[in-house]
Length: 293
Image (tube, rainbow, N blue to C red; front, side, top):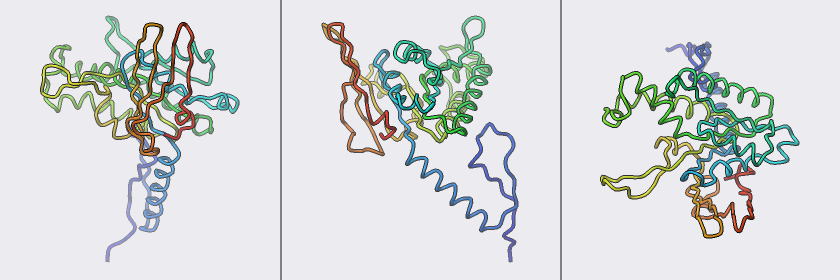
């Protein structure tokens, strides 16, 4: 008869960068209880917190749409939104539209070496420190959301630099590499974004630019989001931003491409920003503001 007492490693409440794992001696009943608790926690997080991807061409209002998550009520309640500003554009939204309020905490973690090449280790040290700050706000009950603005920069600038340095390649040689080499770019990206930031128990928003889509053809057949393909699998919803320039201004439309939580919104279009004859009108996307979509 086998002994139900055994030493097990329980890692569901830890993160990949935490070196010490909890080693405990547990009975089957203990292990079952822990697993059921873990399942319940994950289900509650998925039910309670939005995980939204926003993408589109440059200057299409992506960062402004993400900023809708922060409200006057949040400010009154001393809630915070932390922004990993890899794209170095969200800071302009904070300055120009939010009066530089302290509760909208924006950090561009990218550190560059002489010659402008990204310092991967220094950059990720800053990003992980900011991630630890987010966990502190969560522990205090004061974090509403985290935003990663520039997931494409994290992937193709920060993490690709690590790959290029490891294999001593220049930019022109990157596309010719075998799959195992790409793992040196994709693994740190996924370890940080997927397994740390997007596992936080709060609302999460990821922003990326668009890129041309090719289908075995030298000419592009459309555009897609420039985050890693696997990132989109994590989102509860995705929105594409589209900018339409007119003779006397422009309008900016949010197109709901997917929503597991509110499927009735799929295919809907919201004009969130209208600029006409010098007048600017912003319409709040309430389902983002309320963390519902």
